Image 1: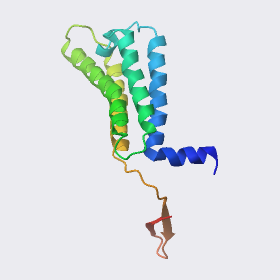
Image 2 (image 1 turned 90 degrees about the vertical axis):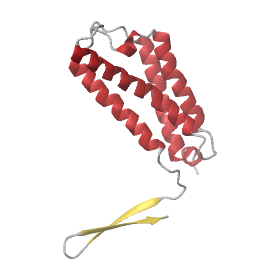
Image 3 (image 1 turned 120 degrees about the vertical axis):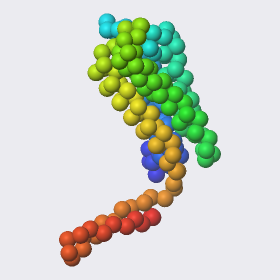
Image 4 (image 1 turned 135 degrees about the horizontal axis):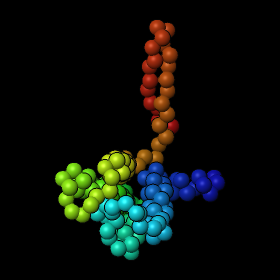
Length: 161
């Protein structure tokens, strides 16, 4: 068994997702610290000090990576909770920006197209993490078998290995 196979077996599917998304969230934390303030009007989350925004993504990243290596079932839920927080915060912030733009509230809001696309993006990420968090951890491999029927139809069934 190779080292990659051992790591995959140790982490499982849920742990692997936590590790990968934790690394991505860490990259976002570094990016937040290195990105200049945009010249357009700011979204609500962009008004926070950079250190707060870096900590939101960075702590979430570290918790997710730590929880990826917890072997007991159910312990990884804190990692998934940590992953949801920054993307849900961003989705909510961009949703507020749409509200500010629609009703012309102070402060000035970013362009509507920017806000709508970011609500869609961060909202989709939020629901993706929630969906993955609901996946069961299985040790079996499930294989989908497709059979072409004489009448041209297709029959499918799954088998566990």
